[in-house]
Amino acid sequence: MIYLDTSALLKRYVPEANSDIFDNYFVGSAPFLISQLVLVELRCTLARKRRNKEIAAGREKAAMGEVRTDIQDGLLVISSVADTHFSEALHLMDALPKFPLRSLDAIHLAIANSHQTHEIATADNIFRQAAQALQIKVAYFGT
Image 1 (cartoon, helix red, strand yellow):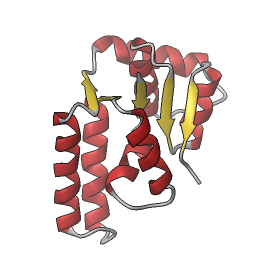
Image 2: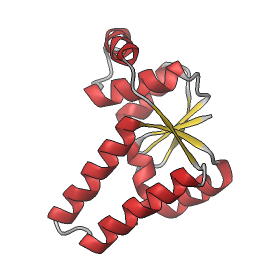
Image 3: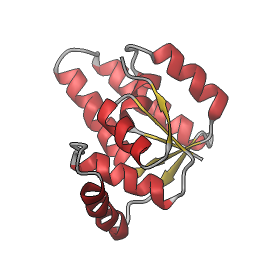
Image 4: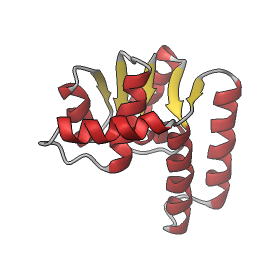
């Protein structure tokens, strides 16, 4: 199963660069694995975009409704975050010293690794490089 990073999944619900390309990928490759962390990050990002007046409050609410629909329809499968993921994230940060991984990205990689995902989708270049260093195939939607 393919693990979706928040930066890629956001493109499904908020129009931005490469949203159309990601949507084609989404439709052709679902279902996807996400974590509870993705849901929290996605919600936070939508709220920030609303506060910054990048999206309207209606778009924020609609986006969260679309996320719930994708979960209910089985297009997004949610993984819990376990204590072992934090330990693995620490290990990954030591194993990948040349990549300036942020804490949440290390946890995303740990979750993806624990599910033995064969591919990760992201729009984050550092995350992409770290996943590739771990020999994980990456679908990249950044600019």
